[in-house]
Amino acid sequence: MDLLISAAARALAAGDPLGALNRVALRDDAPALALRGIAMAQLGDLPRARALMRDAARAFGPRFAVARARCAVAEAEIALAARDLAGPTHALEAARAVLQAHGDFPNAAYARYIQARRLLLIGRLDQADQLLGQIDPAPFPPALWAGRELALAGIAMRRLQAKAAKAALARARHAASQAGVPALLAEVENAILALGAPAARLTIRGQERLVDTAGIEALLESGALAVDACRGVVCDAHGSVSLARRPVLFTLARLLGAAWPDDAPRDALIAQAFRARSIDESHRVRLRVEIGRLRTALRPLAEVRATPRGYVLKPRHARQVAGLAWPVDTPHGAVLALLADGESWSSSALALALGASQRTVQRALDALAAAGKARCYGNGRARRWVAAPLPAFATSLLLPSPLFERLG
Image (cartoon, rainbow, N blue to C red; front, side):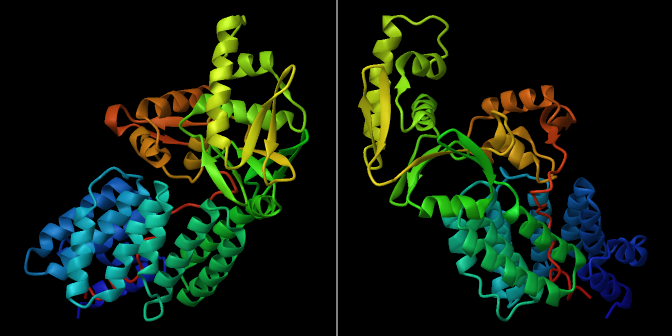
């Protein structure tokens, strides 16, 4: 047993990367390279950390399959922190299979957890939930348990299930306290702050106020019809209709929702939905066509009726209509929300996470940079975008504490 390696691993597990580096900074053997990589990642130097993890995997060689697999899991975690979301995932799955086959169940579970976090970042909530459901945290270290509960809370928050998110965060706080890792406990506390922070601007009958996730959940449970500009959907307690990829229809739905219970004038709908400076008969024909498409899309939830001066929205089940928008009044709130986690993003990773084209994201980034809300560094494919972290968003870097606990 290498005492320095063991001491460095314990320092990392306790959240002390500088203490770990003091023990292994001058060593170039495989375990030391791996531990230095994790330490550099915890200190924020992600490119150097990734290079060290690759060096460690090569240094272990094919005889140490389990150690190489642990290096692959750590590299995947670092890539996730660097928001490299478009890279292949087969290496992580192969590492998970090796760890599972050799009985290293905690690290195999951690590899699955990293896969779930990536799916959560790119919005594939059902797949992430399914993966997390395959992890039984009972026999594993408290840090892994806390990470799983944090991911479950993130899924619940994305689904606007505040009660489920609050319960998951309570379990995460208990597990993080047992783990005794300050960074992990701080991550949980930041997530709790995010749950209670303003999540949207709610507008009902012209009255606007900020609401948190619990307020949005209560609104939907109250039987209201919500026109949600954050997700591009129209929803109530009976279902939802996504108009995220049909911007003209969503703009019409938003304008009709803002005018409810009154009707919206035709000229106002044309001017804002079609951005027309002068209105002629062709615009009125197009409006009738688009209203017909909107009627078809919203049929399960609401009717769109013609009036002498325009159109009015009539919910089928709801008692009132509410509008939801981003807390920050910007047309690029989704991009800004991702940037606000404090990590650096490439435009390709943002496009993948938002389900949009890279060119659309680049235009949004340019607009945010011009407004002073985002900044970039690097050139070409190395360009990364960042924003000043908002108090309502938590960071995501949770490196595995059990990953190298048996390297010595």
